[in-house]
Image (tube, rainbow, N blue to C red; front, side, top):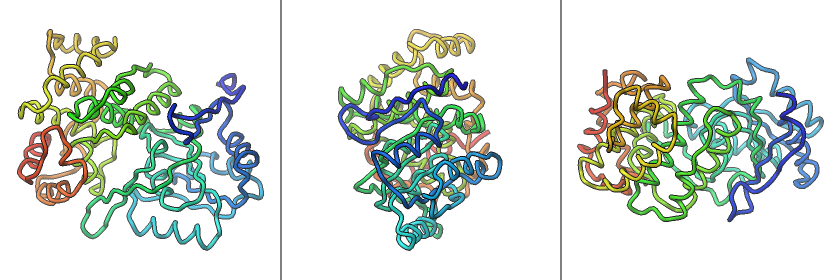
Length: 365
């Protein structure tokens, strides 16, 4: 792996935007220090780091050591799905400590928790959530259990990709967050409000066997999201599952196939679903999974194809598997109806009963 780290490549993540820049080819502590001291010239650094990385590895200490003298504050951990109270604490720290740059080291919740402050933001991701490539984020109202989405004017300035760091991520988190990226692409391809640019980015294939290519693939998935195409019910309902303790990637594993089936039953986007299946079938691994399941018919159903892929990865497919029971469906439905993407679903969802129909279909076993 050491030969992988030889020379840095640094370029804009997207061809139509100057930020974020994406850097790879150097170990993340060196890359971070280089950019802070040269092009960014920042001197009061606040690190927000994953609690598990801090506890189980030396990576946080390596970063602090490399940034010798620049670090004036460190926060270890953010609760999953970012309680609003913790975001307020971060805002207060940034103000009191006069922070001019935040560096995040961890997965999506760590990244999203750093987006509201106006300080320059460097993200060093450990999952495939893609949060580091967009300004949009969310936080949880712990009283109502509702997820609130916000979009600051500014997003991350620099993303540092380090596949060696990514090897510390548990396989379940890595794979489920990868399905989250698939969710982005599928809901864009199946959106009735998509466009040619978004479609082009959403169906560009990547080699899933290499961690860095996965990281690059997520970048392209988020490029599709940035084309102003609204997403759908998988994201909308998934946002509200988060406060119940379900990981972002797991919500996609559970909801996406059934949302596709729901839309197909309503006759909302059947042609676009068929086109999405054609894109998936260009991947030899997907074709192999279908053949193994004896499901390689001429016109396989998108929901079934996604179900087989997700099961092959060993990811959860029911709410029961992640500890969500039917007694929470009513409040989940009510909170989902307030999400901005529920009404931009291919079949616009306006009633709680429609959300519950989807939830019941994936309740278990």
